[in-house]
Length: 251
Image (cartoon, rainbow, N blue to C red; front, side, top):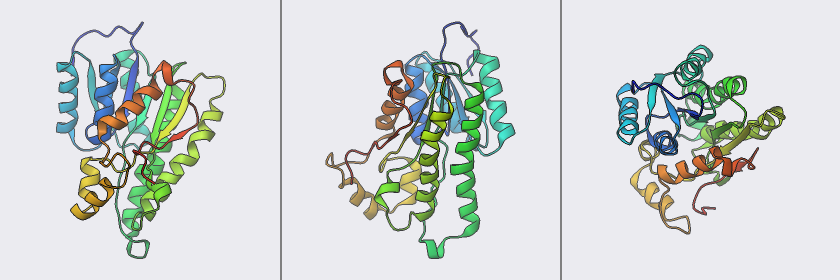
């Protein structure tokens, strides 16, 4: 955790949930490189979150790690409180926290289903609710879906359903923010080489998916972070209420 005094008159501030690993870490480090002070939200991996904070600090940025279950409204509110107290406000909220538990619908454990929906759907709703209440003018909300919503792979029914809910929220929330000068968009990555993805798929399936896009590779967290950085920037502010399928052309 950095100890320098923040300049709250010009600093832009981002909260990135799921910021300790994978795409979330890529986003946190990319936004820090753009000059944002970053709140790295994490669920259980404090060591990984502190590694992100250290990496940001070594690159000349400022970040702080905060534990928060995204589906817990009180924990999420405390995370926003800390961002405001430490850095003076919040301009960008990126909800990259998520679960991926795969099985055919007929065999899917309903307790696992409930946990997945709690994180992916309720978590998106809770983080979005705090963002709506807290974001400064000119801000951006970025949520995460998945290109599997359109690809409809067998075994992904629960995960795709949870991400379809995120997509349904996107344009509605953008319209509810009329007059606030705040954008709302969702990024839907294709197969991306994150720990979450690699743990959920066997080697044969990973190789098959990597061969599908015309670019003939898996995406990387850095690929997706570039899309998020654009949406969070003034250059991307005219994009609003959209679901962007960042997947290398996989169909």
